[in-house]
Length: 173
Ligand code: ATP
Ligand code: MG
Image: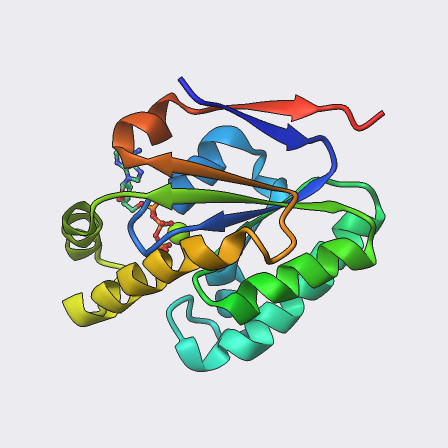
């Protein structure tokens, strides 16, 4: 069973394709108020959690709130795919600006499973090609993550590892 060490005060970036189980993982391990999800911020700024044209404003708002939380010493989890280098760089920047450690937790499930889950959801309507692109982005992410400034990179491969994972919050002092 994987025990993931996470500093008590951290900015935790979940990383994974749609349907990998990020929101489920966040619900299981963190309090609702600790989790900032890109879906929720799209809904806040555009009344529609799937409105991709609202992403820039949604992430501006998400980063702003993350900064407020980190300044107040509150652990913050970012529930977004975080598959693009620029998305992760923005999170590392917010963490550094507040002297907080950025940590990545990668959820890696087989693409077929992510697709089956996505197809079954009424609130996700994108096609298989979109998921295939996310899977390619995830493969690239592995090579990039180590040098992006994350203090720790935890990788959970497959549903069993994801379901068995526990988080141990670590004191910094
Ligand atoms: P998105 O990026 O689209 O928001 P996500 O990574 O947040 O996706 P979830 O919403 O957590 O994914 O999960 C997608 C679907 O898969 C949900 O219907 C959820 O119930 C199911 N699921 C997620 N994790 C698990 C799990 N560990 N075991 C069984 N089912 C799961
Ligand atoms: Mg989600």
